[in-house]
Amino acid sequence: MGPGFFFIAILGCGDGSTACTPVATMPTRYESRSACAAATGSALAGSTEFDFPTILAECRPGSAPAANRAPAKRLTVDARQG
Image (cartoon, rainbow, N blue to C red; front, side):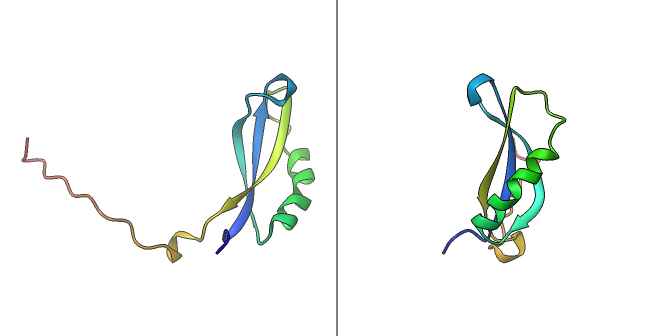
Protein backbone atom coordinates (compact mmCIF):
# COMPACT_ATOMS: atom_id res chain seq x y z
CA MET A 1 0.00 0.00 0.00
CA GLY A 2 1.37 3.46 -0.91
CA PRO A 3 1.43 6.65 1.10
CA GLY A 4 -1.85 8.09 2.34
CA PHE A 5 -1.05 11.54 0.94
CA PHE A 6 1.73 13.84 -0.26
CA PHE A 7 2.81 17.20 1.12
CA ILE A 8 5.15 19.96 -0.04
CA ALA A 9 8.34 20.50 1.92
CA ILE A 10 10.16 23.79 1.37
CA LEU A 11 13.95 23.41 1.47
CA GLY A 12 16.55 26.12 1.90
CA CYS A 13 19.81 25.30 0.13
CA GLY A 14 23.34 26.67 0.02
CA ASP A 15 25.02 27.78 -3.18
CA GLY A 16 24.62 25.25 -5.98
CA SER A 17 21.59 23.62 -4.31
CA THR A 18 23.82 21.78 -1.85
CA ALA A 19 23.31 21.24 1.86
CA CYS A 20 19.52 21.65 1.74
CA THR A 21 17.64 22.01 5.00
CA PRO A 22 13.85 21.69 5.46
CA VAL A 23 12.53 25.13 6.47
CA ALA A 24 8.76 24.73 6.11
CA THR A 25 5.98 22.27 5.40
CA MET A 26 2.94 23.45 3.50
CA PRO A 27 -0.36 22.64 5.26
CA THR A 28 -2.16 21.25 2.20
CA ARG A 29 -2.22 17.48 1.66
CA TYR A 30 -2.46 16.06 -1.85
CA GLU A 31 -4.00 12.76 -2.90
CA SER A 32 -1.38 12.07 -5.58
CA ARG A 33 2.23 12.94 -6.34
CA SER A 34 1.16 14.61 -9.62
CA ALA A 35 -1.30 16.92 -7.82
CA CYS A 36 1.43 17.78 -5.33
CA ALA A 37 3.97 18.46 -8.09
CA ALA A 38 1.50 20.74 -9.87
CA ALA A 39 1.28 22.91 -6.73
CA THR A 40 5.02 23.30 -6.10
CA GLY A 41 5.32 26.45 -8.24
CA SER A 42 2.78 28.39 -6.21
CA ALA A 43 4.29 27.05 -2.97
CA LEU A 44 7.69 28.42 -4.02
CA ALA A 45 6.18 31.76 -5.03
CA GLY A 46 4.74 32.12 -1.53
CA SER A 47 7.98 31.14 0.23
CA THR A 48 10.13 34.22 -0.16
CA GLU A 49 10.79 34.89 3.53
CA PHE A 50 13.66 32.41 3.88
CA ASP A 51 17.26 33.62 3.75
CA PHE A 52 18.91 31.02 1.52
CA PRO A 53 20.56 31.39 -1.91
CA THR A 54 18.24 28.70 -3.28
CA ILE A 55 14.75 27.61 -2.21
CA LEU A 56 13.30 24.31 -3.46
CA ALA A 57 9.87 22.70 -3.13
CA GLU A 58 9.76 18.93 -2.89
CA CYS A 59 6.80 16.56 -2.71
CA ARG A 60 7.17 14.03 0.07
CA PRO A 61 4.98 11.07 0.96
CA GLY A 62 2.97 11.21 4.15
CA SER A 63 1.27 8.48 6.08
CA ALA A 64 -2.28 7.84 7.14
CA PRO A 65 -3.72 10.20 9.76
CA ALA A 66 -2.97 9.32 13.37
CA ALA A 67 -6.57 8.19 13.92
CA ASN A 68 -5.98 5.34 11.47
CA ARG A 69 -2.79 4.14 13.14
CA ALA A 70 -2.49 1.69 15.98
CA PRO A 71 -2.42 3.43 19.36
CA ALA A 72 1.01 4.22 20.72
CA LYS A 73 2.25 2.21 23.69
CA ARG A 74 2.19 4.20 26.89
CA LEU A 75 5.29 4.24 29.05
CA THR A 76 4.72 4.64 32.76
CA VAL A 77 7.58 5.68 35.02
CA ASP A 78 7.36 5.24 38.77
CA ALA A 79 9.12 8.21 40.40
CA ARG A 80 9.53 6.24 43.64
CA GLN A 81 12.07 3.93 42.00
CA GLY A 82 15.63 5.01 41.85
